[in-house]
Length: 429
Image (cartoon, rainbow, N blue to C red; front, side, top):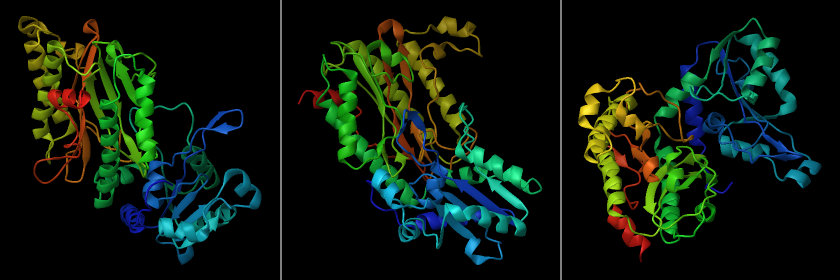
């Protein structure tokens, strides 16, 4: 791993907090992520399941965590099952966790090999009645491929059909919503690395540069600062491509007079930052571009006042929509008379601002949490209004990450260049 080792007290506390939410007479099973096949004999780079990492810190495939706090056998109340290494595996794939390393990383005393899992599970099942199984319950995610959690969970249910099964995901989501001090520090580190990358590309971007060259500059800065990579597929969108919300081809040339919309974030210790900025390719905004940019920036600054305890993402979105509606009228993009006749289910502002303003973030860029969830101190969310005008070949999005406190939010990207004049000055040094 590239990042500094995380104190295992963090993972111990996360497991204990989860166990407090379990019913009596229960066990819980958590599985590491799959190695995802690419083609031939290759796998995509391994990235651990966010929940499994949150509970163990273990960055290795084919791992299983068993939690059974009421089990009579003390050695199975908390157990970690890992891939047994051998000389051939070490030669071809490299080092795997030793028992000592796993204990130091996860803070789990009882480390076993995968060969021991079936017998251990049978013993624990004989004592306990309730089983918690985990899955990714993100409401907008519909993968075609079953995860390891789903596949192995089905096997457990078929082998032990008389037990009562429960969902672990809602309990974990409740925990993960509120970031601990250690988590906030990791997100801050991811943000600091992202800031370095942004400042680097302000000095690199110019007419004639390719989007993928800019992506390469970002990736280079991430790697040299110990990031694990990108927290999500980066968007480097020049000209009209910026009007495609999830544009990731990054294969166009940046042309004189175009704006460049970038949405990227470093991942550090599996925690991600999430930044959006829009800059002029030639280093100077045109009057119209600056007018549009400042309209988005005004919405961003104004809606920050809604990032307080008790508000919800729905509240934030509704307020941002109201503010954006006013800005779009001022920009001459929507007409006041037309607004009186608009379909309330399809308001006019949606033509130019069609996405939400906020989402939770942490171990995942779109982290656990509902739009109806009242905000509480310790939550981290994005603030990202935008305007998209295909007929002007222009898309502008500005995004910072905010930490909810008892009072006003803390902007984790407050030291990032954001004012149009500041961006111009840095690009023309």
